[in-house]
Image (cartoon, rainbow, N blue to C red):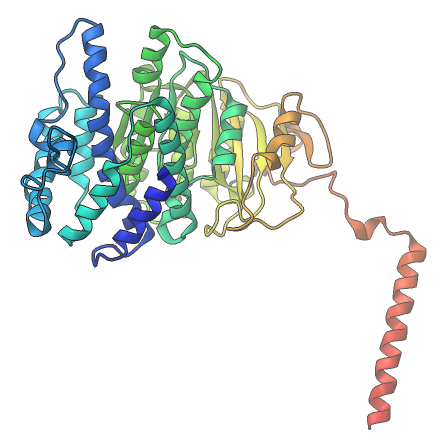
Length: 487
């Protein structure tokens, strides 16, 4: 049975449980079980690596709490040991009263080592509860998960791809599921355009499902035979993130672990609680890739005080955070509402002005509606570099011959033209360049106004327009005659 079939089987089992109601519940509960199975299967590799380095191996979990012992205990011949296996209420009670409290305590035991996988386990299980109420249902799920192996690179790759697909399905389900998911094709293009390299630090202050960090990791190691030093850099010195919401934090950690980042440096915290004026050079990073939350208008005054430009709009606060977080020469690819380019309120104008004066806003990618399913807003992607003012901005407007939706999602192919033209900032029907000196120097309006867009009506010659008018007049006359005859 394939991993995909296993996932479907798990869903069918969980549907029978009264504690599972939403698409988010499915992935949340599947995640913690898969996570513990992954740790169990990875333990042998950790033991071998420790021996190769001449170190003593210390298992992450005590024997009693390893998946192979509490979930599916087996005899020496590999068969399920029904004498030791917990079932029904005994299983639920063990998970709720022993397993979760034990794992939760890691956040205290390892608080001095916040970059370790042990500390991450503690933080994850501090935020989780087991929603499965039936011991019979949980036992059946454990049986399926036990058959899923995470030992070989191929197995891990397949599982990580399927997990990404699960996150996408959760996002497509609407409601708050969309908060955790940015379409993978868009992420890939943004990462390719920014092009992070090994040795650079990469940050996302609104991690969600960690799609940007995962894709950056894949991009940075692609087609390379990594040296042990390079691997150490990627594992422990490259990726940083912050996430406020508990479920997103769990999913992001799980996603990074499945992709091979063993101890993700993601903090469960409110990014906006950091005062940007207190940032020092050691806090700054080389690359920022993010799709921060937008639309919130009720950010507390206490949080607003952490920023030079005070506003209740969360997207403007996140953008200020990212601008402060970049090193000199650092670069960013940030998704934001398209209204940022044109709003005339004081806060938006002030942030726009600073972006143009202190950063080189190299590229604006204008996206069509429907890219973020269920969000109901149009967005743009800002590509900028810190340390020099903006002279010219290259715009690209993504015009598609179809409407985007659940069954017709954005693809990488849709964005190939953007990536191809961006390298030379070439002009086309969909792309153009503006000089910042020519924009309104009071509002700094950066609205997307495609000068090359073909308007069919303006291209029709006069004789065709007159012909069309004559046809409409004739049709109107026929309608009026018909009405008179009826009367």
